[in-house]
Length: 628
Image (cartoon, rainbow, N blue to C red; front, side, top):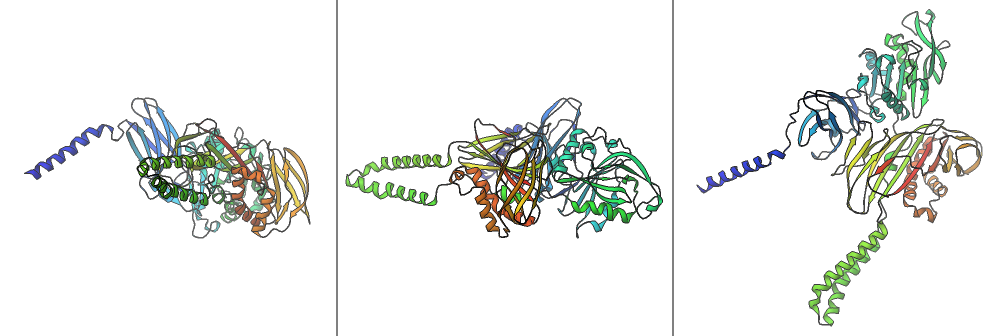
């Protein structure tokens, strides 16, 4: 009988608990709405690339205020996830479109979920996509008719062994608004631009994708005015002027004896011709390239063998290289934290503390016959020692909030746009929560490494980012990786050649930035350091080091050039550590560059625009300009 009473009591207690707490437990969102989630670059995603999604919400009820959140597992742990969110407002019986993204895809993101929530109520929608291999080729085709160019998937001769070509057909109206979200794509193909109605915001995002290393291919609709009013017009490899009918002597090239092609002024490198008529032209833009096919490829003007070998065979080998020259992970992710006290100091401090609080304290009090005072002296010594350790920590670690930004500015010779890869770290002298705002819509950010208390990253409707809930323990640091497109006032042109014993030529710096401690490198030869203010500078510099084929020797020389043995520089901890960290990887890349002319230079301007929600942090900027 007692057993039955106990069982009834337990069941009753559970029922009361569930009833009492049910109002605050999350439940299915009951607001009437239709939610459609699509991957903005179609369905294929590569590992370590962003996952952009477009969210269409049709609100069939009263006005709705809430949030949409992308949830992505970051490891095998069920509760270890990152989230990007956007606060939303939808009027009654209204419809709106939103854009979000997870910055880096991994194998753990197969369960990517979109959550629409209001307070404690939520509704989940699965994001459907396919994980492609990094060596696969993904071509996003923006065409008048969805489905064109599907035959490309059969051109096996153009791709690496054991890989595939995927032709995707994203909706032009649902394309991402951020350049970084196009990094899944090896090539973007655009045919008949006016029919696609791509707005200026997305045209800029695609151009920034090219500047960052992407490949954009245009096929003309044979109207010389088709690019008028478009942001792409100023970057075309060909200025369209008129059309021309090519004759029957081109039977080995064209499928029809009377094919029409676009004629005009080439602004780049001609890669394929028929007679004197260009068929494929390339123009470098930033790290990437824009290609122009002078025929309407949607009409399949070329014979299969010619198109595969001479057109796509020359396009696909130049797939994007998203880490242009330097291994970002080895340089940016290994920034050391603030200096720690020497191990010997810690040892001797503990030794004297144990000696003082134990034998010395005991024998002194015993000699005075006042052992009862142990109850007072032990806590007093402990408190004084703790205060001393705390003061020592402040003297070493400091009491200031420190924001350190180390940026690598990748610049192609004679280009005014660059990719800026950076790491910003926040050092906190106290246990505090921080938030960071980015004012440049081209900036993307994510935390480096997995942390249990992952911050929330919001993407505003204007594309700006904000990172909230960055919880940092006392005297600790958290690091975030960022990337952006930087447009300078003008290009940096390096026209240098290496002679028998010196570098000669001209450098024109129209960026508006002054670079210091610059060096020119080619074939293992290194120039004397020089400063480079804006303007034109004639170069005639003897080799300061010649044939530096040993990595250690090159590191030693660059260390001397950058003054790393200077005691004054060692006091500038962020700059000193940044240059120290970069030496090993930079040396390897310089040696691999062989006879390519390179220039390195330093600058300390603030080019990564972020705002911390704390007053008067100490900010250190260190920029390495890497010009090839």
